[in-house]
Image 1 (cartoon, rainbow, N blue to C red):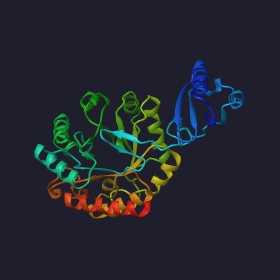
Image 2 (image 1 turned 60 degrees about the horizontal axis):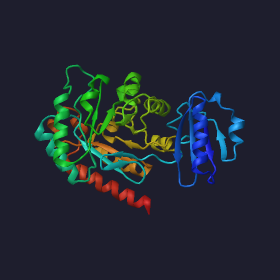
Image 3 (image 1 turned 120 degrees about the vertical axis):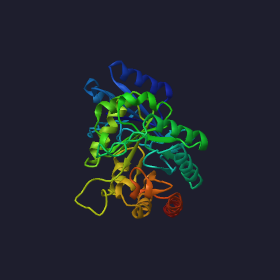
Length: 334
């Protein structure tokens, strides 16, 4: 349930109504916009007499939210959320460029790539330390050592780092990671999501390869229900019958998510296509569709990459993509 307060409501009146709502055992999410204040009631809202609430002098409207994702819903939080990450942000008018290798392979490799992508416009460094692979014989990542190397690259360049977590037991190792990524395979690992909800870390939540937008938002709700609202959603392609690309990029998901939710949404064109030559056009499409950023795999020697080389761009190619994206953004903002 949400209650929209009148613009004439005083701070004392707002505090009084919040105290009353909490006194019946509900929690309150407060969203302050430019012209109105919206109260989101969390819990068993049957405890509140809707007619009584709507009859209060300072209440404009009272609405029950029909969607099962309450806190992730734009009705609950009308203003776009902007997620602060170190000295940058994701959402609003800021377009994020997350770039780096699928997997951290060595100190020389990750620091070299970090320097290159920063110089070419990256705002965050992505890199895998723990790698979920379809085959048990494929490279699984450097694990804790990989995280340490990412932190060295962060120290060298100042770029915030993004890396994927596989298990809630690994959380202590991610204490200095700026953005914890939940990969497609773990989007519905609800026990992991609950643990991440208890942290204040920024979570990058990827859509599962066979999951609906509603299911993605419900997974975000699991994290938000635990008290963590620092969530970035990511469309990374879904599995269809098409075989010319690794997955099929659902670019319409950007528009749908932006309509349904206040959370920022980015696109991963690298995993969506699995083919380096298609990454640029899909990144441009993401920008045109209203995405708040892109996540792009960049490797200094894709042919010898230990993981997902065919979809990785060289630093020079990434620079070309960033330039193109900025051109699209400038065009649609005019």
